[in-house]
Length: 338
Image 1 (spheres, helix red, strand yellow):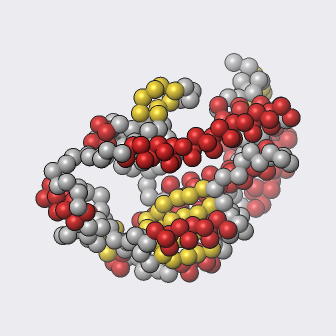
Image 2 (spheres, rainbow, N blue to C red):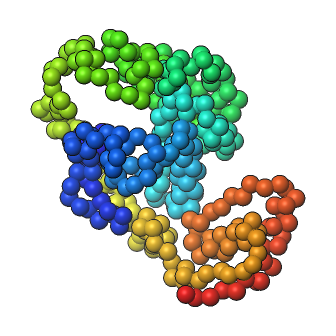
Image 3 (cartoon, one colour):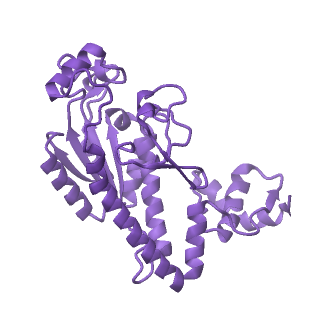
């Protein structure tokens, strides 16, 4: 998608480099060493990829954090007449993601927080790398998510685009809880010998199976990485044009916002550029255990930059004691400038 839409590369300072973020040659190196299109784990910079994740479940767990962050941005920066942040978060997950503990914990807190700006599409094809999910995963996922407090829908056929569109419209209309759309699909769809098998999970189809699959699709069998004439233009005239229009309108809105709320706008720009305010170079030196020093230091940092937030999992009694001693602990730390 990054290739077809013509997304351009930027560096870590968000300076435009004038080159495609993902070229055809990058696609040819899919899941190879140093590729811009690796499998998981991912760890380096590919423009247009907002987060990199490792084991299954981490991606959708990250989406919960993104939804929390989106709500915080809206609550902190939006003002009457200036709806600066009002976007939704969408994630695609599979059977393996649903098996992971981290995704369950994240889904639970998403339901608890009633994150109406979060939607997950669950690609339920019943296949893992070991075989059918019936070997190890037979729970009622829909029932589990309803217990979490999510809005749940089912789409019986992944190729039913009208039903998918209806489900997405309904999910957007539900604003008091997150949404899960369970989509029944066929892994390796169209591959005559490998569809619905673990043989198409995480490994190449093979030259002969690729040819047969292309034949099923009515695609040129010997073509490699073919992008037919008109495809780039189609994406530019639709997704590209919509995105450019939305961006232009947002920048005009932010310019007016900046004129009326200059301090908030400055803070917003700092966060977007990942810059820190003046005086941030102060360091804390003390001999306290990190369990006590860390939350205290983060709260002090948060007083300078509102984007610094923290959460500490601990027993209530121990946590309360740490909170009560925060002020004392900080006074006991020597601050110095490097």
